[in-house]
Length: 114
Length: 114
DNA sequence: GCTCATGGTTACCTCTTTGTACGTACTTCC
DNA sequence: GGAAGTACGTACAAAGAGGTAACCATGAGC
Image: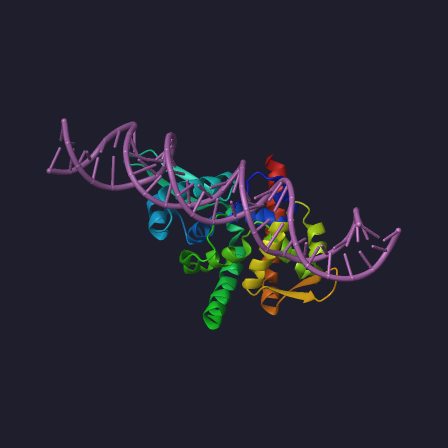
């Protein structure tokens, strides 16, 4: 999605506003895993093998900016950084579940129709 | 969203699969209006003043390919083309409503926090 | 004093997406 | 005969997204 993140036109339509927040290339999956609990950076990397380190960092930063994710840095060496959903982030759960369920339907449909 | 439309990695995660379908720059809004009923091409253009004609065409074509939208051409001059949701497209309604409602929440939050 | 692990950052380059601008077909209206 | 209306298509350029690879800091263990 080439959707400039501070574009006014996003916020005109509430659907677009939501998609602007969760529509990033890897955000859906990240949120999906964070719904299941707190994860360290490295753990998320293992969950998203196709996502480069740079992209994961960027997506997490944006989610943090949007108030969906809380980032906690522990003063240790080697560093330890944990990511978890905020209350606001958890309010996305029904939406994500809806997206997941519909996605399953879509995938089944793809298989039928080739 | 730079999300290649026939990328396998989309279909691994059902959430990503959904976002791959509705995540296009204007698809959310288009679907939102089509939920309210059949629209001609020109009518949709008026609903999406920030979307160029070319983009609207492209987004509608992709939605058609994905089986969400039905395109009907009437053999008239000047041409008349109508777009409406398929049954499968209408099955997205609860998801879109969820996205819209969450989007409203997000927008209110933005106003509060500046 | 060298290496490893963790969670980054940065520069550079490529590919995709989107925008702008213009062309098209056909008919009706003036 | 020239403009307007409708729903496109196409070419070119700009912007944005994403990948790769290299670098950084630091303390523990050898």
